[in-house]
Length: 594
Image 1 (cartoon, rainbow, N blue to C red):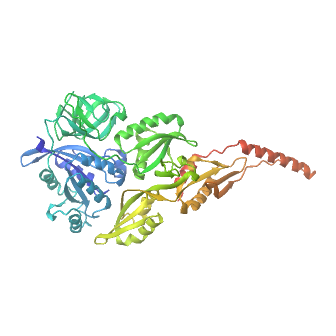
Image 2: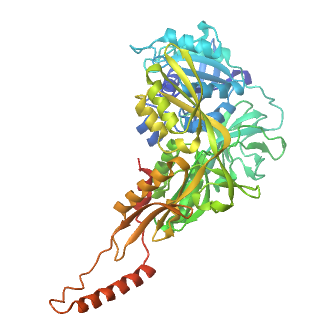
Image 3: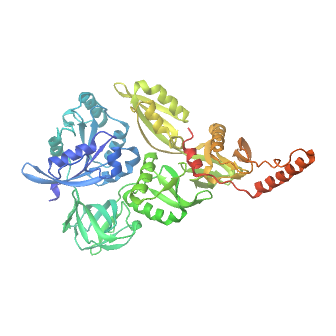
């Protein structure tokens, strides 16, 4: 049976029509009747935004030359922030469909996902989608694909996810070109966990692919990394719903329910084996994911802290690239320091916390992690400006850099270069890919990108630039910590790390913004921006005063003087014991400073 199984995934840039094409394949093989658009994107958020956030696995049966083949299809996300999902799906497959939009051509994300698939030795089947569109240019796109992967022209399949053209050719190609899973049916069980979900009635459901051996219902299994043992209460394959089976064999993709309650016991990338016939070797699956952007997530009500922890743990099952650890802040109380793969990922996590777990949270300014070297030569990793050692002890600071690749049409090169240089980017190379499409490669600090780079790039290029990046290590940089003081007291949640050249301007804008937002008190509030002991900007919120002279009409000036002196002493005393409450709006305003 093993030679009748094909495991494959679909990789493409955002909006090139992967999920629509997947729907047509499910319809053609009569796995489901498609009632609404995008059957595989079942999360509300995915349907509203029209993006895939999770990889979705589904099994189809297909008759080819009188024999039935089992095809396991994994639909993957296209956005750069979810590339970790793609790497996990690729580890569970033997082949991949590379889908390219006939109207757009090859874009940045297509290339980076393709390299990931080639690294895993997958068989690549190139498909040009949206060939029914009036502005399609399949010939030019074919040239680009031939240049990119060096295949023959006749190997490229033309298709359309809307009309269903070419779907049969794709399914035939999957059976003919993609190899069946290679594994030993009689060896001890080895199964790779590539995803997991939380179900409030049944506990945690883990999705796996069997590399060697087979598994039976009711068997005792053990997870190698955690060393925990469970009973396989239910196993089965992934159709549109979970469909139970009594046994699964080598090469199958399926799920296991074993009543696991705690989220931390299931690790994506772990290996399952049986207790009776244990395989000691864990499968090397995918690399540990490195978060790019860090932000503090705090509950609005401090008593919701434990609920927030539980919600994040359940969310982490479904999204293994989310990392978090507890931290506290003077202004916001207790919360978590979360690591995200990018800004879209951060936004999606916030939305999901709100929708799926009913958690209202505050997110602080996103930043990246820095390496701080002190004068003794020791290194400390700092995620948060509040954790910075004193300026006098620091020898130098290194910040993370990335290799950014921007693919765009020639008429937008000027504005894009200006944007990248403004963000301290260095041009490495510029090359024409085909026609008037250009790839610009930059070396840029990650900290400059995290807040608004992508949005600005999209608006400058009217959406025609695609952007992709990977890490390029740490480099020394002239960074300084900018503190905001209220009446001489630093506010930890408002301090930021910034480049020397931007510091004065940023400090000034911050003070002006805070002056608008802070409510007036009975005493003057001094808002100052400081670098170390040097004040670089100041604004004052004037005090509210009571008119103590109202009852003095006429009479000698010394009586008025006496009352004013008395008020002055009272104000001075008040300023010593009074403290300034910073409203929630002020923390969020810093994010929208531009």
